[in-house]
Image 1 (tube, rainbow, N blue to C red):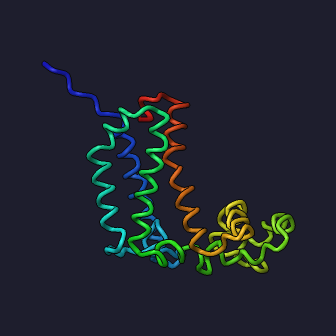
Image 2 (image 1 turned 60 degrees about the horizontal axis):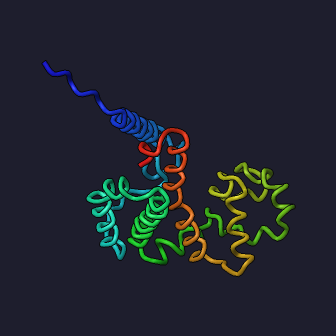
Length: 204
Protein backbone atom coordinates (compact mmCIF):
# COMPACT_ATOMS: atom_id res chain seq x y z
CA UNK A 1 0.00 0.00 0.00
CA UNK A 2 1.48 3.29 -1.08
CA UNK A 3 1.39 6.30 1.18
CA UNK A 4 -0.45 9.37 -0.10
CA UNK A 5 1.86 12.08 -1.35
CA UNK A 6 2.17 14.97 1.10
CA UNK A 7 0.59 18.23 0.03
CA UNK A 8 3.32 20.73 -0.93
CA UNK A 9 3.61 23.65 1.45
CA UNK A 10 3.27 26.00 -1.49
CA UNK A 11 -0.34 24.88 -1.89
CA UNK A 12 -1.07 25.79 1.72
CA UNK A 13 0.37 29.24 1.09
CA UNK A 14 -1.71 29.66 -2.08
CA UNK A 15 -4.85 28.50 -0.27
CA UNK A 16 -4.22 30.97 2.55
CA UNK A 17 -3.71 33.78 0.04
CA UNK A 18 -6.96 32.89 -1.76
CA UNK A 19 -8.86 32.89 1.53
CA UNK A 20 -7.35 36.24 2.52
CA UNK A 21 -8.26 37.89 -0.78
CA UNK A 22 -11.75 36.37 -0.70
CA UNK A 23 -12.31 37.71 2.81
CA UNK A 24 -11.08 41.15 1.72
CA UNK A 25 -13.46 41.14 -1.25
CA UNK A 26 -16.47 40.07 0.82
CA UNK A 27 -15.81 42.51 3.65
CA UNK A 28 -15.03 45.26 1.14
CA UNK A 29 -18.27 44.70 -0.74
CA UNK A 30 -20.22 44.76 2.51
CA UNK A 31 -18.63 48.01 3.71
CA UNK A 32 -18.89 49.53 0.24
CA UNK A 33 -22.66 49.02 0.38
CA UNK A 34 -22.84 51.58 3.17
CA UNK A 35 -20.63 54.15 1.41
CA UNK A 36 -17.98 53.96 4.12
CA UNK A 37 -15.37 52.65 1.71
CA UNK A 38 -14.77 54.52 -1.53
CA UNK A 39 -13.30 51.89 -3.81
CA UNK A 40 -14.55 50.65 -7.12
CA UNK A 41 -13.50 47.01 -6.88
CA UNK A 42 -12.88 46.01 -3.23
CA UNK A 43 -10.27 45.56 -1.95
CA UNK A 44 -8.74 47.49 -4.87
CA UNK A 45 -9.25 51.13 -5.76
CA UNK A 46 -10.19 50.50 -9.36
CA UNK A 47 -12.84 49.09 -11.62
CA UNK A 48 -13.36 45.92 -13.63
CA UNK A 49 -12.50 46.94 -17.18
CA UNK A 50 -10.94 44.17 -19.30
CA UNK A 51 -9.58 45.62 -22.55
CA UNK A 52 -6.83 45.33 -25.12
CA UNK A 53 -4.20 47.88 -26.08
CA UNK A 54 -0.72 48.44 -27.52
CA UNK A 55 0.97 46.46 -24.75
CA UNK A 56 -1.28 43.41 -24.98
CA UNK A 57 0.83 41.37 -27.46
CA UNK A 58 3.98 41.92 -25.39
CA UNK A 59 2.16 40.96 -22.19
CA UNK A 60 0.95 37.71 -23.75
CA UNK A 61 4.43 36.87 -25.06
CA UNK A 62 6.12 37.60 -21.73
CA UNK A 63 3.54 35.58 -19.79
CA UNK A 64 3.79 32.61 -22.14
CA UNK A 65 7.59 32.67 -22.10
CA UNK A 66 7.75 32.79 -18.30
CA UNK A 67 5.28 29.93 -17.91
CA UNK A 68 7.02 27.80 -20.53
CA UNK A 69 10.67 28.49 -19.74
CA UNK A 70 10.82 30.41 -16.46
CA UNK A 71 11.27 27.53 -13.99
CA UNK A 72 13.92 25.79 -16.08
CA UNK A 73 15.87 28.98 -16.71
CA UNK A 74 15.67 29.99 -13.05
CA UNK A 75 17.03 26.60 -11.99
CA UNK A 76 19.91 26.68 -14.50
CA UNK A 77 21.17 30.27 -14.38
CA UNK A 78 24.03 31.20 -12.05
CA UNK A 79 22.80 33.24 -9.10
CA UNK A 80 24.45 36.46 -10.27
CA UNK A 81 22.78 36.12 -13.65
CA UNK A 82 19.42 35.15 -12.17
CA UNK A 83 18.95 38.45 -10.37
CA UNK A 84 19.23 40.73 -13.43
CA UNK A 85 17.22 38.20 -15.45
CA UNK A 86 14.41 38.37 -12.88
CA UNK A 87 14.56 42.16 -12.91
CA UNK A 88 14.50 42.30 -16.71
CA UNK A 89 11.54 39.94 -16.85
CA UNK A 90 9.65 42.00 -14.28
CA UNK A 91 10.42 45.14 -16.28
CA UNK A 92 9.12 43.57 -19.48
CA UNK A 93 5.96 42.36 -17.75
CA UNK A 94 5.22 45.65 -15.96
CA UNK A 95 5.92 47.83 -18.99
CA UNK A 96 3.76 45.65 -21.22
CA UNK A 97 0.87 45.86 -18.75
CA UNK A 98 1.23 49.63 -18.36
CA UNK A 99 1.32 50.16 -22.11
CA UNK A 100 -1.95 48.33 -22.62
CA UNK A 101 -3.42 51.75 -21.84
CA UNK A 102 -0.86 53.52 -24.03
CA UNK A 103 1.95 55.87 -23.02
CA UNK A 104 -0.15 58.79 -21.78
CA UNK A 105 -2.82 56.96 -19.82
CA UNK A 106 -0.70 53.99 -18.81
CA UNK A 107 2.55 55.72 -17.81
CA UNK A 108 2.87 59.49 -18.17
CA UNK A 109 -0.52 60.41 -16.73
CA UNK A 110 -0.70 57.95 -13.85
CA UNK A 111 1.02 60.12 -11.24
CA UNK A 112 -0.37 63.47 -12.35
CA UNK A 113 -3.97 63.26 -11.10
CA UNK A 114 -5.07 65.36 -8.13
CA UNK A 115 -4.71 62.45 -5.70
CA UNK A 116 -1.18 61.55 -6.81
CA UNK A 117 2.34 62.64 -5.89
CA UNK A 118 3.10 65.06 -8.70
CA UNK A 119 0.19 67.30 -7.78
CA UNK A 120 2.10 68.53 -4.70
CA UNK A 121 5.63 68.85 -6.05
CA UNK A 122 5.29 72.64 -6.19
CA UNK A 123 4.52 72.73 -2.44
CA UNK A 124 8.01 71.49 -1.56
CA UNK A 125 9.85 74.80 -1.94
CA UNK A 126 11.68 74.27 1.35
CA UNK A 127 12.33 70.54 1.69
CA UNK A 128 13.49 70.48 5.36
CA UNK A 129 10.54 72.64 6.44
CA UNK A 130 8.07 70.52 4.48
CA UNK A 131 9.41 67.34 6.04
CA UNK A 132 9.10 68.80 9.54
CA UNK A 133 5.51 69.85 8.87
CA UNK A 134 4.52 66.78 6.84
CA UNK A 135 2.45 65.07 9.56
CA UNK A 136 0.40 68.20 10.09
CA UNK A 137 -1.26 67.77 6.70
CA UNK A 138 -2.06 64.04 6.76
CA UNK A 139 -5.54 64.05 8.27
CA UNK A 140 -8.39 64.71 5.87
CA UNK A 141 -9.70 67.77 7.72
CA UNK A 142 -6.30 69.36 8.40
CA UNK A 143 -5.33 72.61 6.72
CA UNK A 144 -4.02 72.05 3.17
CA UNK A 145 -4.24 68.29 3.68
CA UNK A 146 -2.14 66.11 1.42
CA UNK A 147 -3.84 64.14 -1.37
CA UNK A 148 -4.66 60.50 -0.63
CA UNK A 149 -1.50 58.86 -1.93
CA UNK A 150 0.80 61.46 -0.42
CA UNK A 151 -0.88 61.26 2.98
CA UNK A 152 -0.96 57.47 2.89
CA UNK A 153 2.79 56.97 2.41
CA UNK A 154 5.95 58.13 4.17
CA UNK A 155 7.27 61.47 2.88
CA UNK A 156 10.22 59.78 1.19
CA UNK A 157 7.92 58.63 -1.60
CA UNK A 158 6.88 62.17 -2.49
CA UNK A 159 10.40 63.48 -1.90
CA UNK A 160 11.68 61.10 -4.57
CA UNK A 161 9.55 62.81 -7.21
CA UNK A 162 10.42 66.25 -5.86
CA UNK A 163 14.13 65.51 -6.28
CA UNK A 164 13.49 64.08 -9.73
CA UNK A 165 11.85 67.37 -10.66
CA UNK A 166 14.73 69.36 -9.15
CA UNK A 167 17.29 67.67 -11.40
CA UNK A 168 15.28 68.53 -14.50
CA UNK A 169 13.37 65.27 -14.93
CA UNK A 170 9.94 66.58 -13.99
CA UNK A 171 6.61 65.43 -15.33
CA UNK A 172 4.63 62.24 -15.45
CA UNK A 173 6.76 60.47 -18.04
CA UNK A 174 9.95 60.47 -16.00
CA UNK A 175 8.07 59.75 -12.78
CA UNK A 176 6.21 56.83 -14.31
CA UNK A 177 9.36 55.37 -15.85
CA UNK A 178 11.23 55.61 -12.54
CA UNK A 179 8.35 54.01 -10.65
CA UNK A 180 8.18 51.06 -13.03
CA UNK A 181 11.96 50.61 -13.12
CA UNK A 182 12.39 50.69 -9.35
CA UNK A 183 9.19 48.78 -8.64
CA UNK A 184 10.36 45.91 -10.83
CA UNK A 185 13.21 45.28 -8.38
CA UNK A 186 10.70 43.87 -5.87
CA UNK A 187 11.15 40.39 -7.32
CA UNK A 188 14.91 40.66 -6.93
CA UNK A 189 14.46 41.73 -3.31
CA UNK A 190 12.29 38.66 -2.67
CA UNK A 191 14.94 36.36 -4.18
CA UNK A 192 17.70 37.88 -2.06
CA UNK A 193 15.60 37.77 1.12
CA UNK A 194 14.51 34.15 0.67
CA UNK A 195 18.07 33.07 -0.08
CA UNK A 196 19.34 34.85 3.03
CA UNK A 197 16.61 33.57 5.33
CA UNK A 198 16.11 30.07 3.92
CA UNK A 199 18.04 28.63 0.99
CA UNK A 200 18.98 29.41 -2.58
CA UNK A 201 17.08 26.37 -3.82
CA UNK A 202 13.88 27.68 -2.29
CA UNK A 203 14.49 31.16 -3.71
CA UNK A 204 14.81 29.72 -7.20
